[in-house]
Length: 120
Image (cartoon, rainbow, N blue to C red; front, top):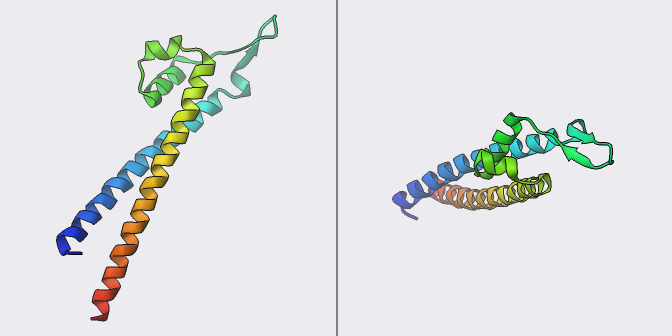
């Protein structure tokens, strides 16, 4: 691996690390939104149906995380929102894990090369 290749790999590591941090923030945001849907947000009406009331701030956060408009978010049924949030959280975790695996592989290769060069 040439010096340029190593520099390129290091740039990829920095980029992926940044992307992983963004994904981690997104995952934490989704977790917080899902917590906002917890018991304190549930209201049982006279017919014993469960409805969930959210605040505009929560709806705005949901819209941002799901990359949809605020209006679309407000009009989606709660069940659909929860499903989309769970799917987005799972997808984000999977992408982050793949990027971490890549960083680990590249880091090990660079470390191995540095060890070989140091021995010479």
